[in-house]
Amino acid sequence: MLIETIDEAALSDLVQRFYARARQDALLGPVFERAIQDWPPHIATITSFWAQAMLGGDRYRGNAFAKHMGKGIEPQMFERWLTLWRQSVHEIFAEAAATRLIDRAELIGRSLHSGLLFARGPTWPDN
Ligand code: HEM
Image 1 (cartoon, rainbow, N blue to C red):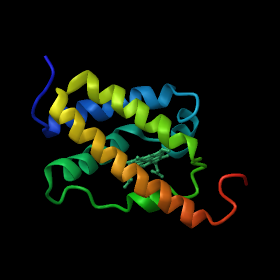
Image 2 (cartoon, helix red, strand yellow):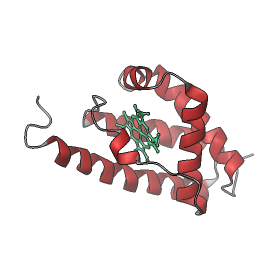
Image 3 (cartoon, protein in one colour):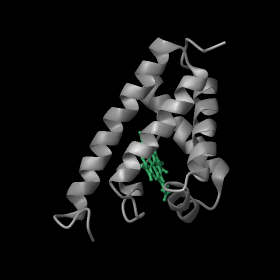
Image 4 (cartoon, protein in one colour):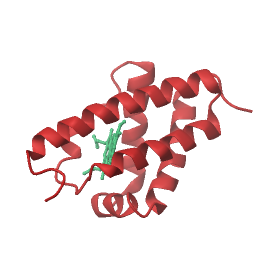
């Protein structure tokens, strides 16, 4: 049964499925394994981030942009990130909810991507 309503429990399930994929991924896995020593708090933070993005409130207090600087993130990683997100979303959510979650990730992903591109300066992506 696919879920119609986005709530915190469903988002937690989504984030866990996403990371199960991301950690095994040849491109993204090493970036996460380098950056994250303790997974449960990271999963909890990401779940709060998504709960805030989709349900509102004041659940995430962090600087998601700054957290991505200096992590060895390359432009082609964004498309892979989104592919894994779409796969995970479609496993759990019905169409309307899935579309909202994917649209939001694309939007945030684009702004994160252009922000990192700008921060890294004109040598991106070849250095
Ligand atoms: C190229 C794709 C991406 C890669 C490789 C990546 C990698 C990472 C890594 C390694 C961290 C841990 C940083 C740390 O704790 O020091 C992180 C944190 C995080 N990422 Fe990403 N990320 C990507 C895209 C995205 C996108 C598209 C979103 C949102 C839609 C996102 C949301 C977050 C959030 C909310 C955190 C937690 C920040 C915090 O701890 O406060 N990431 N990411």
